[in-house]
Length: 131
Image (cartoon, rainbow, N blue to C red; front, side, top):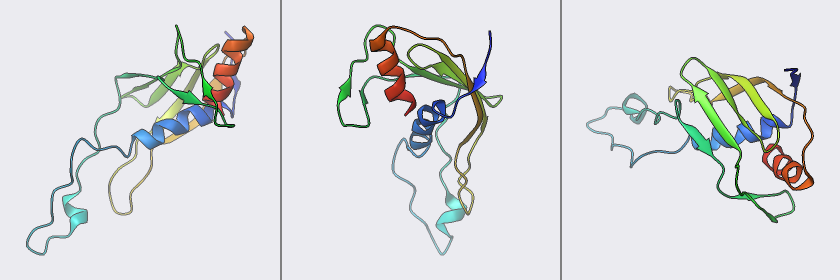
């Protein structure tokens, strides 16, 4: 399988950056003069799970049909991300973020992808997912 650098797949991976800020509950309150930074709640684990796109809106604000085979993202604990974009597969190295002060984001790169063509509706799905 040939692979090539694909900057469009980075947009799909940027979606995961938004997920990295999600929390399972409220942050604990600071107590007795201890700074909140020292009591930072760890980020929830997002690795070893296949994330599936269930709703997608294109750059023009139109909903894109996500049907029988939705785009996916999987992050392995070893620091590799991969997934399906609608027609092609993509992959990247991952550097996990932290909640230290200052916080560090989840980072992807370099990103690569296969370069196959598909039916117009699948290419539209992939285009919206990777935009």
